[in-house]
Length: 176
Image (cartoon, rainbow, N blue to C red):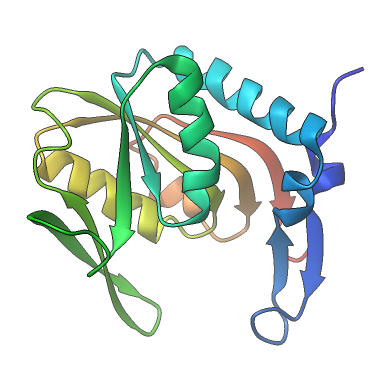
């Protein structure tokens, strides 16, 4: 019987602030069968997109992209918050609801023309994923798709990323 991944995603009310229903993946990570099913489904979706490498967004995207890259025999590029990577980096600053944030990758990690799948745990508004896609483009790569485990419906993330081939494994309404 197929694993229903939604059963393994814990809802934490009022975290990190009052009124937010946080979708916690730690319960998914505690269930080896559910985690294995997640990776298997992500790999199946990634394989359909004919990608050359994966780019994982700091930090929960690392948990899913690393086993995917290993299984697929593909390189893994880390998309980190500013100041976390040693050596020369490319960066992209983007606007949040209240302020800005910056993401970075190592210069040279993405080769010109490389087809890159961007991986994260959750899609909300799409801001960090769009920033990662812009980093991929600035490095000369091609954002060949976006893969997330959880998609929150109602925050316009999919609409904000309408130019990208996006897949998600589980969807929730934003107030569920």
